[in-house]
Amino acid sequence: MGQGNDAETLKCPYLRPERADRLGAFPLGVYCRLPDGRVRIPSRDELARFCTTGHHGDCAGFRRARYLETVVSGLA
Image 1: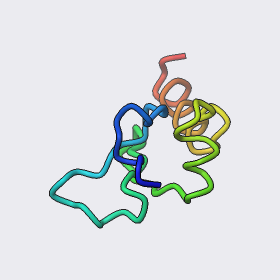
Image 2 (image 1 turned 90 degrees about the vertical axis):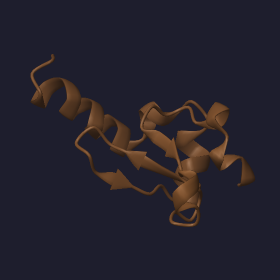
Image 3 (image 1 turned 120 degrees about the horizontal axis):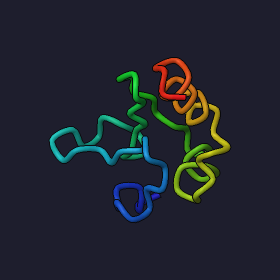
Image 4 (image 1 turned 90 degrees about the horizontal axis):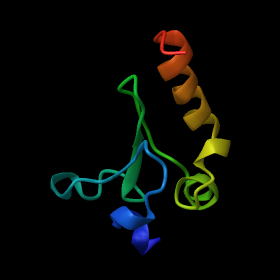
């Protein structure tokens, strides 16, 4: 999974590449920064299925974050 840090492969808007000053902190070199400030580390399977393929809309974490952004924050 060497392409994990490549910004072009990060399709999900919540997926962030690991910063250079923290290399090695996250097993796959990426993490999810959710709107509420929580950090979630996707599994290798989630990364391959959802995060870098354009299917992030199928990810439960993405759907929950979008729900919280719109409904809970009053934007809907």
